[in-house]
Length: 174
Image 1 (tube, rainbow, N blue to C red):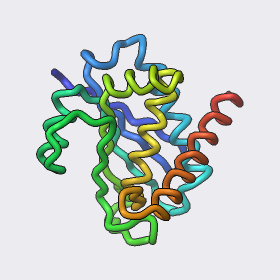
Image 2 (cartoon, rainbow, N blue to C red; image 1 turned 180 degrees about the horizontal axis):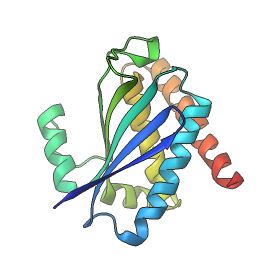
Image 3 (cartoon, one colour; image 1 turned 45 degrees about the vertical axis):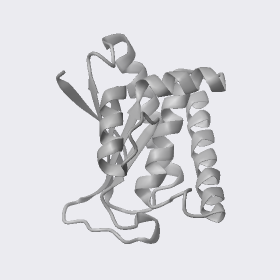
Image 4 (cartoon, helix red, strand yellow; image 1 turned 120 degrees about the vertical axis):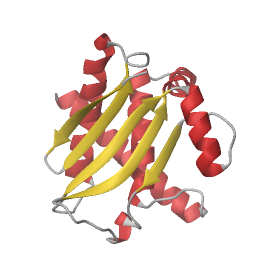
């Protein structure tokens, strides 16, 4: 499986999207790009405050790949919806390293089949769930963690809701 990469930018936010032809058809690619552009715009205009460009790597993966990575890095031998791997200590509190004109925030992997299942369960479109999972992963790479306390869970889920609503507003305006 050959991986492809496209860069989707909005001012200070660049999302490098990695995919394979097996998971993303040529017909679907434009819709992925559109939703990723909405997310980049929402992050740039409604959240990200640094002057340097933020780089985020986003991959759409299959069950086998996400299960393997989840097992290797989290010792959880199961398929999951999204995994995130921060490159910075704590962007949230301004603790980051940048040797370039940009800041690499980290990697986010979204499992296509789980995203499809959850979209059906929540009665939303696949791309609405996809962008929701991306935002969830983004907040993790930015330094938020809903698993450490109820207060942190509330903070993260409130931010998640705000960013997803901003994406919805951007979509309606386009």
